[in-house]
Image (cartoon, rainbow, N blue to C red):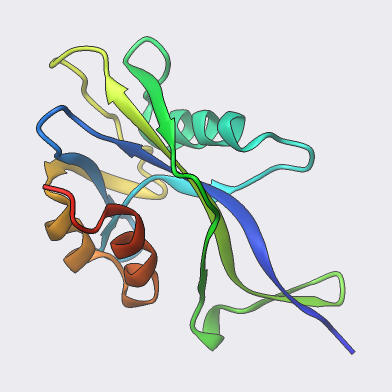
Length: 149
């Protein structure tokens, strides 16, 4: 019988001093916004995965942003059943993620969405982003970003 498990991943939050965060519109779901995220590669450290995902999806790297801090625990959420994936006899039912916070090195930082996962970006409040993210991710976003300006 197949087991159920959560995919290990990371989330990259680029946050300015005024508390706004850099949100990205999904290419496959216009009107749905989220943060850069992705699964960890085999043997990859979470901080390295956060840098990789941030660079691949937004074009941002150490020349534009600095790693500020990491949320202190793993945050998990389940996918809707239609998104469950079978891999090697196991069924992936969601993700568990480490969240990393990056700060722009100056006010001229411009993200370049990859065009595959994301098509647009904008600076938004955490509350706005929480309201725009897919419902199944909302509790994770509220847990990490909730109560922020």
